[in-house]
Image (cartoon, rainbow, N blue to C red; front, side, top):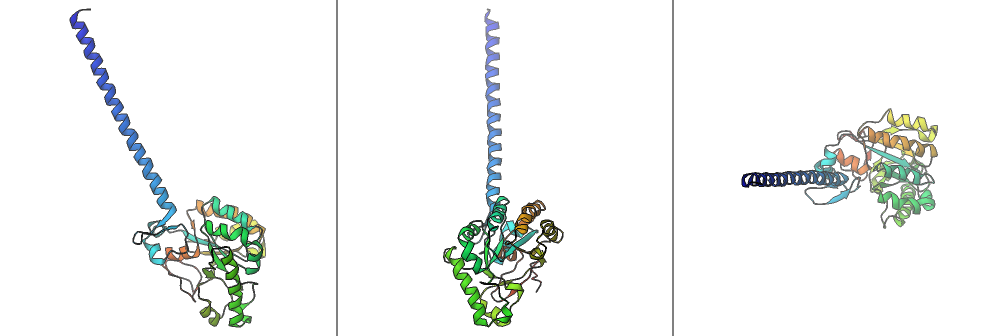
Amino acid sequence: MDRNRWKAQCQILICAAVLDAAILGLMAGTVQVRAGAADSRKELSLAEEQAILPDTGRILPAGSPEMTAEEGKENSRFAALGSVVALTFDDGPDVYTGELLDTLERYGAQATFFMLGSNVEKYGADTIPRMAALGCELGNHSYSHPNMKKLSVDDGLAQFQMTDDLIAQYNNGQGATVVRFPYGNSTDDLLAEIGRPSIMWDVDTLDWETKNVQANISAVLNNVSPGDIILMHDIHEATVESCATIVPELVNRGYELVTIHTLAAANGVDLAAGETYYGFHNGATNE
């Protein structure tokens, strides 16, 4: 091999090595950019799964009953969210409540349970800790479902106190944060003494009457709108079965299924003791 040909081949080999190094460098940069984008998505997903309160530094689970109206406004997740509704279940817990909790957990949803003390005695140990773990809100629906208009204030308060004491056994000593009067019947005197917000509803599925899966599905999906409080009863098998369709369909439509306190906060409302609320639509309570 002559000297000139040998030098030419060396130059070719050097150029090839330089080109390979450049390609490897570009690939490494691309991997870093992609990794950075993936990390950003992970961080965004985490932020979306938590209610991060910028001024206080508090981090609450999604659906936390502790969130105030001001925190709800400040929190980007809920401030930007227009389609927020609250599923509420009365008269439980019961044998079907565990299945309902399975559905809520599967779709990352929360609900508010207005419980009877007589049923907490039977099923509370198996359901209340799980409700709390899933971020659901615990409500008080009296002990034995009497018409409060026929009771004295003292007897009415005793109904709620007994149920609070039972709930507290399975909730780290804490009773219910909201109440719902049986049949929606209360008196001004009892309401003034109850010490918590009273929650009504603006979508009544009548599930207790129809006991029909498709009727329940239609009652919710044909009437729901942002800010609604939806009334159902987890003591009925048909209701729990219908929720296996209702919950994912609401999620598919872009609804966030939250607790009563979170629904109020997302609409700029601070719930007050002794006040009655029917739903939350741009701050209105439909009283």
